[in-house]
Image (cartoon, rainbow, N blue to C red; front, side, top):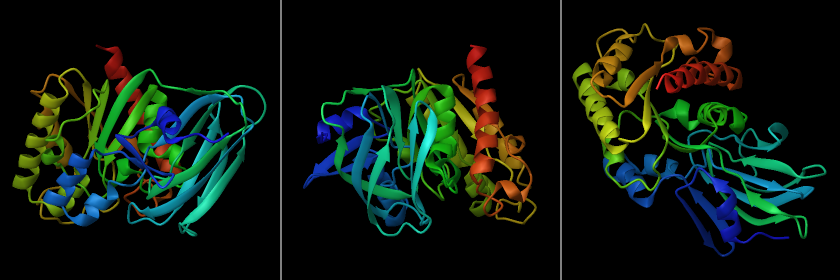
Length: 329
């Protein structure tokens, strides 16, 4: 049984737009207007990264014993690996793809087991993905599954997914699963506080918003620019999502935090500034920081980006802080 584009839309989470052309289905986590902000205020490279399928997943209840589809990969980040995860009733049962993203076309045919179950298919955070020929067993039931809450995650490469091998373990994927939220990932690798991204209308009214910037700002900006962009971003975020719970996520530890940068002050000062900026904003709670992840290289790929082990620790610690804050209100 082949699902048409409308049926695929019904079971897909983490997208603003799904298109079909020549029976090939593409997924977009930014609106066209948001993507244009990157072209206008950043560069073409950043705009192209909006096409990556970070946190895009299918979620449905079915009695089908198999699922299959063809896929094509294209540029979505400056990382080559492209992995798919398939979970059945919350258990990871399939991890397939490649460490170099090649070949850029492929077919997935996965055994889902007997009986009715909830299936989640997590797409690569690193590449843009187009699929075709999405099939289940003939006559199988297909019921979309939604989580209790909705969520949007803004941020840089760490929120984008760098450098998880398993997409289901990347930060925003793991965190939103713990929170019981369907997440739309608005992070772009290399990004800094980007107030202009908030200018276009957002179709989603999320229950929860996270924003995790600062480490790139500290690396490339002077202090005055950092403070100005931080203030403009969080003021706009607070105003845009008045009915949402917003969490300003402080930067995590990095192993080069003692180097000299244009910022002119120690890395730890970034957290102080974000706290000061957010203090007057009644719907913004500050969480996270350097205590969220181990200060050991084994938990990172390069001293900056967590690996799967690092993301597991980070997501669990961040979840505890967010759930405590939600429980207090």
